[in-house]
Image 1 (spheres, rainbow, N blue to C red):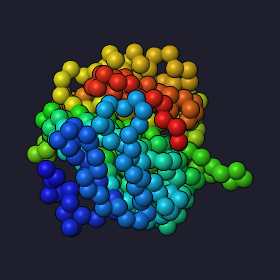
Image 2 (tube, rainbow, N blue to C red):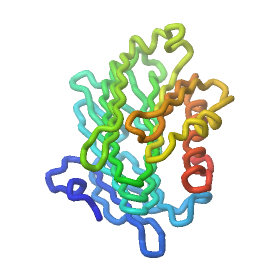
Image 3 (spheres, helix red, strand yellow):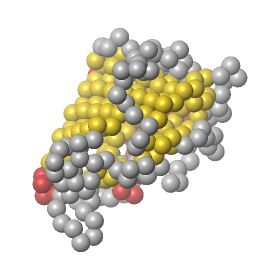
Image 4 (cartoon, rainbow, N blue to C red):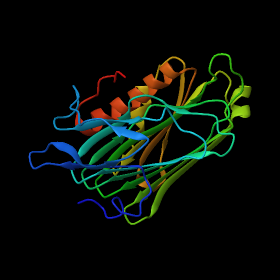
Length: 281
């Protein structure tokens, strides 16, 4: 059953999406309310995915995130549903000289559901000031995979660096109890400095979480990430017995993509017995 909070008329999110499980075990998009600047593609069945798993891609019609915008997404997976949501392209955060922008994502997985939210990286243009906030809500027996990544880029002929990037991530139970919290804040000037031992040689940063009950899958994640050239990765147990977290730093976008895919494939294999193919955009 869909939670009342997800479909509240007072909600300010531009995109709300709910997946459900049919009696034959097939997952599907049960309800959607998607407005500008978002566009949702049709329900897909992708080769190599578990039988009946639903997949969809969320796209931007506006060309990115602009100064002063407050963008929101609510994503829900009903009991027993299996769903994968990604983006059709990287998100560009443009210059924000007047006001910063904010992105809010709320994810909720009911009992027995597997919900994957794996968007492509955010590209921070010079002057971008972006606050990303993700809240993951887990019902008993639910599993969730999610990622968040960013890189800096200056278009050809332009100089400068992004202003700042802030990422807040909370994991909660359905009754609101906080299980884990992560906070990241980096200013463009510091990121660009390339400090030895901190950001020297690093161009892209990412976070991957595997959430759910049971022993944290740290060993499987470490094995999957070992030996990827140009990638530094660390795996940690999350507090509250709610899963594991991976922090990734890479010399470039291809290396980060390989690392995120390796982590995702390892967890998909562990949860469903099937590893996903590398996605083509």
